[in-house]
Length: 145
Ligand SMILES: [Zn+2]
Image (cartoon, rainbow, N blue to C red; front, side):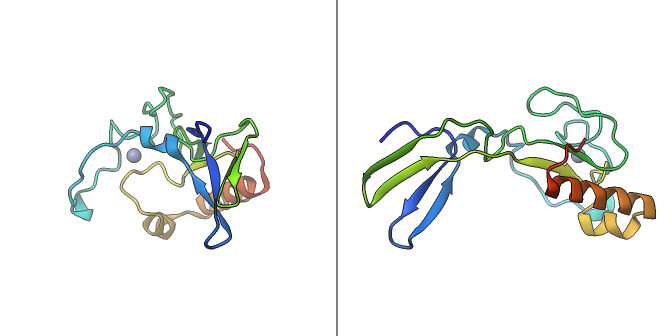
């Protein structure tokens, strides 16, 4: 079998379905074990968070000082664009082929401490409209920043 260390899919002959496989995702950073935090004591900003405004991401880029939504290509995306098309088939039970695509990250709020439900509760009309526009742009493939 060829070295499939990039995103690909494998055929499951038992179900007749293709299964996505992302072996490169094991290289993602992990902050380690986390402990439960009292929701009343969660900080609105964390200096070492990869997603907070103005912080350095895992790939070394600096997030802008965003005030609404922020969208960027996932630093450790499951799918990668521009993958070379590869196929492998040893027999009907062992088939694999490359896949490509783009994975985006959507930060729905600059606040580290809010869940989506909590942020939506406090959205102003402008914030809600901007988030809806961002989701719409992402869905229809527009560049979103
Ligand atoms: Zn954060």
